[in-house]
Every structure is written in C-alpha cells, then in structure tokens.
Image 1 (cartoon, helix red, strand yellow):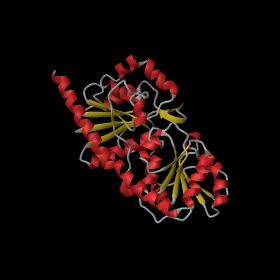
Image 2 (cartoon, rainbow, N blue to C red):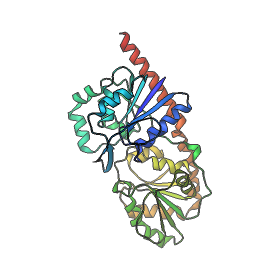
Image 3 (cartoon, rainbow, N blue to C red):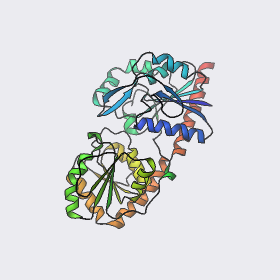
Image 4 (spheres, rainbow, N blue to C red):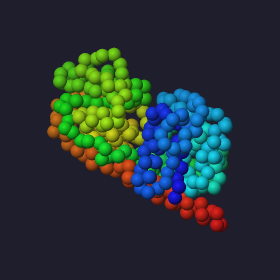
Length: 350
C-alpha cells in the first residue's frame, strides 16, 4: 500500500497540522507502510514539497500559511500519481488539499482538524450541497476529536482518530519542586497573558514558585523564565521537570497536543475547561474557567501546596496519555485506509 499524506499548510512553518502529518508519515513507515508527505514549502521534511510562495491567512484566531496559486493544482496531480491512498488533511483548505480531492483514481481519506469559527460553521450549514459535492470522492472521513467533528455533524459520517505523540519519547521526572510550565506561542489563542496575570498572586502565596515559559519571550518578570523556542529534547526535559503544567487557552482549540505532551511527561495539568482539553485529559486534569486568571491562580496554588496530589495527578495523566500513542494512531489510520480501498474497489466493481 502506497499512501500520500497531504498537508495544506507550509511545511517549513511550525504548526499543529504540519506536526501531525510529519509524525504520521514516520509512524506509517514504522508500521511497514510506504508513505510520503506532500505539501507546500521550500525545503521541508522528506517528501514531495510543492515549491512556491505561501500566503498567511488569519483564521480562527491563528495564522494559516497556505498556497493559493491555482497552478499548484497540476503540481499536486503530478505528485499524487501512483499512490493507492491519498490522505487529505483539512480537505476544504485551499489550494493543496482541494487539489488533492480533485485527483481521480486513488482511495481517499479526509481528516478534519479544526474547531471552525462561527462564520465557517455557517458556511458549512448553508453551503452543504456544494461541500458535499467537493467531498464526493472521499471514501472515509475522520476527525481528530469530537470538537473537530462537530463542524461536519450531519453532513458526512466520520470516525474519531485523535492526534498523537510518541509517548516513550517523553521522560517522566524527577520534577523540580514548585516548577510550573507553559508551552505555546505568544498569541491570544494560547492564553499566555492569563497565566502571567495570575502569576503575582501565585508567587505571593508560594514565594518559591517558578514559571518556565516554553515557546514565547517577553520582558523579564519575577519568578518567570522565558525560554522562547527550544529543541524538542529540551522541551520534553522541561515538561518532565515541571510539577504543574498550565494550559490556559481561552478557546478555538480542537484537540490540545500541548496538554497531551504534558500528560505524557507526567505533569499535573491545570487547563481551561474547553471541550477539546476535556476530551484529551479525560478527567485527569484540574479544569478552570477559560480566561479566569483568578481561578487559574487558585488552582495552581492549590496543587503547589499539595505535592502528593500533584504527583498522583501526574501519574494518572501519564497513563491517560497512552491512549494517544503514535503507534496506535497509525494503526487506526491504516484500518481507515484499508476500508477506503475496499469501498473504492466496491464502487469500481458496481
């Protein structure tokens, strides 16, 4: 079986979908599947990178680097020649994914990742005939979480196949007493300002508390170390050393890989009570009202003052994370590919 994994976003720019498609190709190859990654970019990871300038669009309180040049249609068609299965991520995102949907011949699997904003959900609702027409060649639909799937409820049948990480790559402990971590970019969707607003109160209650911010940089602040972007190995070490991990995202998340990574590292997690994080954590995190700095601070103080509870939460979080190990995610996608091939064969023979 030859599988093409299609990503619509620039592979040279870090992002959630880019990360998962890169990981998926590796997991498939480990499972004995011949897989290639296809998407826009310059150098990118190994695979078929479609050269040309990408355009950054502001969508869903985040930035989406996509290729809008219509000429990419022919490049995608050439790149997908000879594959048995084409796995299209974010199938309605222009132009690479849309171009992949238009290629005839291979079995197709489509995966929805995002929690779309209200205007996109309205577009889905009022434009269902056109969207169904665009998706008519897809044999199997998947979504990374119930949140991502909710946008297409009633439009197509789909199965949930979550995002994942390589759980064994994440060391657990020893933790540093009173260490708290935040992981994410410095944009409103990630909630860095919420934990920074709560931090003076946390430090007043627990003067030994220290916050390590991974992935962002701001002006110096008492008890806060800004690490900006770090290598994967250092990120995992930081998560493993943290007693508590905070994920104060206000919303617009469809999954929560940062929560999963902290769980894999054995950290106790304090997270916003948004559906995506509730799904990933499965009841093992301490949930707080999104955007509530006072509530976030109280939850962090509570755990910093009860290390036995924090340690116990970290242990059950690590166990919960096993449900999202990459090998298991790949196995579920392989099953979807086999089903898509069977459906394509049935359609061809009917």
